[in-house]
Image 1 (cartoon, one colour):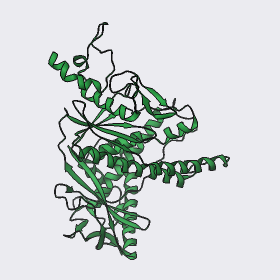
Image 2 (image 1 turned 180 degrees about the vertical axis):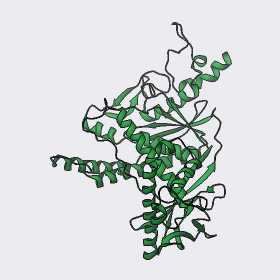
Image 3 (image 1 turned 90 degrees about the horizontal axis):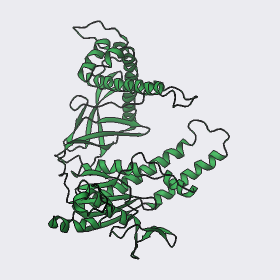
Image 4 (image 1 turned 120 degrees about the vertical axis):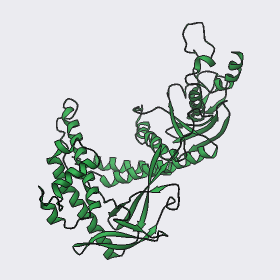
Length: 440
């Protein structure tokens, strides 16, 4: 499979060069807005086309040539004189994508009459800010040592080459196994950078894994991971949490809650700065934890990461403190970020039902008792053993992965008829599997 990962290369332009780059991006965004209006006007014709066919039709409306001296929209040849052809084609694809996005959202708004709020406004055709894609050799030229780059920019009513030093590159810059694709010129505030995508072909590991990393996502401990072999042997355990990030996130949320109580009418954009900081804190924390998880799994030879299937599940807490923890739970974001990083290690992802993973003891002794001495993170087995609840769940998650589709062959049936076993799937069944197979 092909995967694409993007690195941020920081540029170091002078004050004048930074203004030139900003003017170039602004002109490109103006061009995208103008083309998007053309796309909306001719959407019945453009909407059914794909790829280069879209570019041909739109260029036939806005771009005159020797064989096509007259076009319908002559505004472009006067307002965007000598606009580079590669940037024009990139802008056309951006405009088509934004028009398609608006029409899809508007169609969803129209079809949700019974479900939407009576005061909900329809989506507006506000064209988002996009950045130009720089095609190699035509719009950007790199130095051999990647110390600088020549970028085609708009300066003095003309398009010229501008040499800009590259301050910092990424680890993929010198990796010959990854193909460098056309970057985006990103200019925001006082920063200028290149968003450089890298394309790579990865061969995934076999589906029948012998070593997996089972992951339990919790509230107190964000990630609990165990590397388990197919015979039930546990090769390693790891608790991953970042309590400092959680405290800072809760602090931002408490500031928003306090300000909301003092505000009679909360308007749109209320506490946007605090929300943005809280979102960035949660995102960075998820990236740091998933990076540690992937390194741990790869170091012990795991080829598959196994999670509980929690997509669409909405937890409910009996009290406010627990509801606040559930509100900042990063379970879906952790799964998504882990998949991005794990694919680069040729690893696979798997999901098992969450039912019963924490309820039953991994040694097969039956149901566990939670909240031992007021500590909800540990549990007591029926044989008296006290164990960590999250670790117990990871062993059962691994057992569910190895035994799925094979439970009836490895478990003894009760008196009632049917192919399903009466005992829940726990890690102890992996220990009995070789004996059952030899007896059969």
